[in-house]
Length: 126
Image 1 (tube, rainbow, N blue to C red):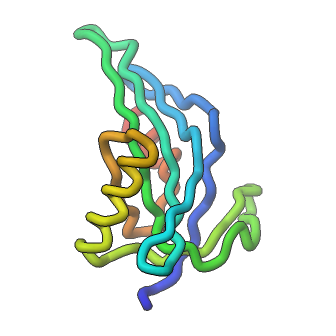
Image 2 (cartoon, rainbow, N blue to C red; image 1 turned 90 degrees about the vertical axis):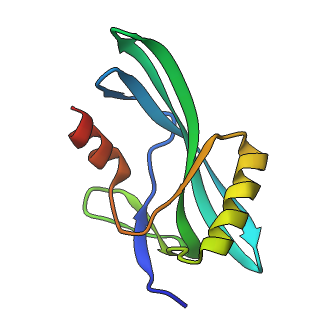
């Protein structure tokens, strides 16, 4: 078993403005893989404020295997679950295929370090 880490659940449905457009997390899901439950979150990004056209992308982020569901809150009031990042590339491929089929997303990424996705994206983009 790998190292457990905290995952701060994202606020679903809240649009975040970024350079060139906006993005939002819209759904949390779970999928069972090889007897373990995997947590994922689905979002979209729209490029609708650029000078050279528009486009969009539906994607999923996989924090990892779910160890403890919504077990506490942080100082900012964010809800925390404990997860174990998925390191094995074969299992990542299997999870990616299942989520793409279930959710119809083009891209599935795996979180390997503890990050605040919303804050990271907003900081880098704006």
